[in-house]
Image (tube, rainbow, N blue to C red; front, side, top):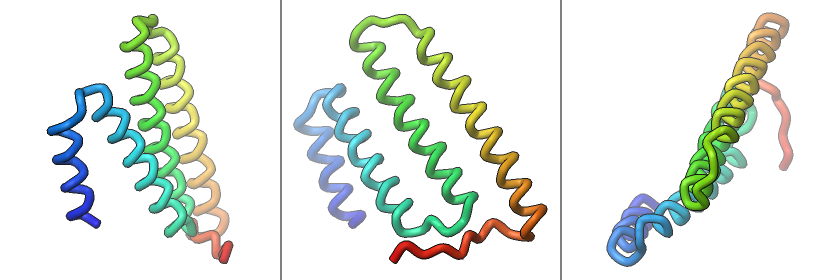
Length: 111
């Protein structure tokens, strides 16, 4: 898997321009985050970390589109503010869960 990713990165650097390389990188990172989320989602802390990774991925997409379209940066600041609020609410819920149950293991299986 690492070998395949390294070959893909070399191909991206050599054949694509910078903007297309960024889009392919965003696509690969979204796929990697989705695969990791599907394989280990039993702990709430892991879910919160993946949620923050997705928020950073969406931030990259929004930033690249706003730079490409010459839009104002107001939406970017609103998005960052909402993602910070989401992270703080998630950590508060995680703290409440750990204090009430002793751990963050959900003990749920989808398979």
